[in-house]
Length: 320
Image (cartoon, rainbow, N blue to C red):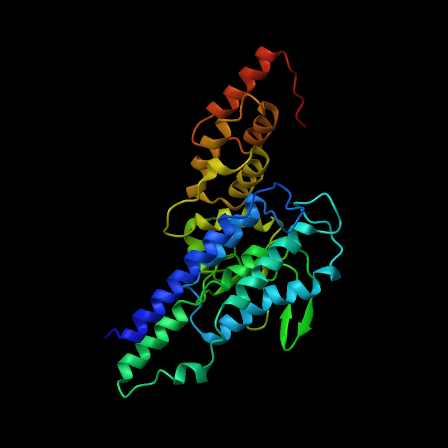
């Protein structure tokens, strides 16, 4: 049962999101975000994702907790002295631009409380539950604050009961509330996954004999960075595979190494297809990779192609 209140509220939220995305898209682009009047394309995409993901946070407490993140960063970003990956300066204006904008978005959102919800309580229980669902499912924007900000180095700090640590949020593409295993990247990003998927689609990940208790904070730590694992783990779920054509050759080679290391079968051919696009410009790197994993690809054609190119160029390669 849909009430007039629900329709009115939904309309207001949709209008807010439309205006916010319009504001984000209206900010001039600059590759380094050196001033608060500009955003780089990566920063802009993070903000758009943040807004588009508003329907995922299921409860008001979780929404509040996530909304604390940009506020915390705005107040404490100077505590971190690490150089931003996007900027040439130690004083990271890219970070400041993103955090300031997140903070402004937070201020534009209503203060959701149980008391506020109580104002809409009616004798019709179903109507009230519908309203509660509408409100909570329209409040998922904040979950992507973590994604938007997790490239920024922030020291662990306790603020009003909320504890934030560097890169402590799991990536949204491979983050499941009902997971039974937690995996942590080399840069301290955690992925909440399902053991059965890892057992079924890979050969090298821990099986059922490996104990991982999220409650006690025990995790499986890997040597790969989060940007590699985020792509890798998407191949172990029933979903559209990630677009590898968007990856640069250096990232692609690291991903291909991880695919072979953990024997993620569904990703092998995709990596090989993309690597073939770079054989002209990166013959040696791709040849070394292909020889290292000789026999793991469907054919030896990748090795032969790289070798033939190097012979035509008159290059000699010595491989230990």
